[in-house]
Length: 453
Image 1 (spheres, rainbow, N blue to C red):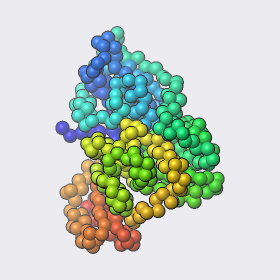
Image 2: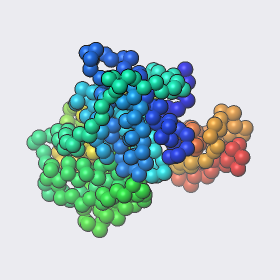
Image 3: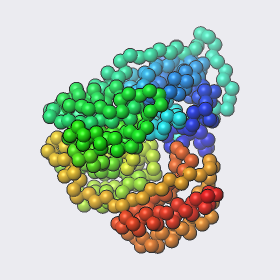
């Protein structure tokens, strides 16, 4: 069965437009609640399933939280609400509190006008396709509220942030601390604003926090992991040793060295992998995606580390890690998975793994990545109408063939539809920056023409 509403990262869209409306989200909560009630697992017959709901700092979170709560309780499911909380925190708390599911209201790195709903299973992992399909199968059915005696209850939990802060700290070795380090952390005015600075401070760092004043509208606005200029400038102006940029829901990471130079997900995964090889606890290989820089693949090969590419999306990286029995993977965009530390991508935990590597090696980010050559890579996002079919677009295939002929085996072309926005992503990679940009424009032009200009 195909999925009508669920994309690669849950259900997402512009607030007020289908499917991100109060009516739909209430039906989504009810449908998910029905699935949980039907699959009770080891729950006693007289005990309600319980879900945890967290959200980022978007103004629409209040509305969608209320709609989800209504849907779940109407299906007979209890609800615990955390308020603003990073996505990986919800995954952790769902598992730690032995709940049946976790739900995050967030559109991650998108602007405040967007929002979305994503689910975690009882084990703290994203739902498998089969469960998402079971939820979708119930979405068009009317809401039939359980009898009053069977209604779910809802309450807020007050210590969620403190629990998660302790979890993050536990991923950093007890024999190490961050004393003597001045760290800038950019919280993107998002869900980590009241968490990330405390984690770093309690580990001993001098912390300068920016992007820590959410107002409902400024999440990801020229800040955070998708707009790293603010981090670079703050690192230089405060003469910091290192900078950390998170996105709105806390599952993406970018970092900066003392000069303000930015290091993306590929480079940070390489730092973690190289450190684990040096210290003898690297397990297996590394999973990247179709977008992972070819230079990283070549650098890992020099270290004799197996490398595999998955489809774009951290859920697909996770699938391949589980299939291979490996623990480390990630995306160029900053989703990094350290499965020996957490069940899902976590920006704060991943930053601590990088900081561990720097502390134990006494190296800087620049020195640690000196043998990693990042090939020029140009990404062009081409807006298209919803429902645009790339494989049926005239002329696009011919332009890709032309570009691949010109690259002559010295680079790569990746052409794919975004899983979260109405965009076609055109990526060309090779050793010559000018050639790469020109070739990317050729394909992007063909896509624009096929999409009607």
